[in-house]
Image (cartoon, rainbow, N blue to C red; front, side):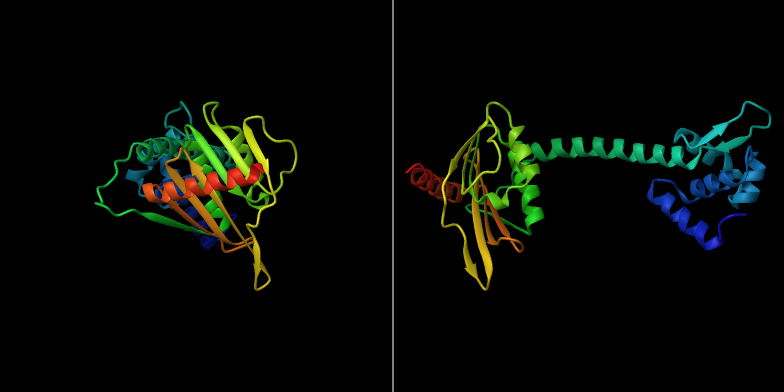
Length: 254
């Protein structure tokens, strides 16, 4: 019979990571070994206590992992692995999407905690993490997005996110260059800017991202690695970088 005990234990653990219990994993594996098995035969092959076999089979049936005959006694057969694992993955994806929607709604409606006069600034590290955070802020924008940054920082995914912003969102970008046609919903000012310089043979870059005149992300660091992002919704932070944006917008028009 195929599969050593160690291999079967590893497979059972993998199935548990897909949402099966230990008994469910053992019964499903047993059914792959024996076609059209009765509950007694499943108990003998799987080692699962006989009293637990029927409840386990009911749950596997609900998860679309077994077939059940209309005979007496009932016989059970396993869904082929390609279909069975596919069903488990589809169920996980559905649950993940549902959880994401609910959690996103909770996040959007979260209540701020009173912190007196303290103005918080949050840090993000690494280019990938900063890209993810900025993409989230782009999707949340309702009125305006203003960006001052070099082209190197933009990814194709970020540009696609900007292109899908709602019609009510005005987007202005000051950038050193732009590859390809400018998206219709984005106003681009191209101006070579002194936003990078060399330190220890690394190009230092930076940028400012303003959202709805309420939220700011400022980035700075080595161009290829080690970027740091500072995010804040504090009035002072927003006012300062809004003035910074207006200064560079006037400069870029010259």
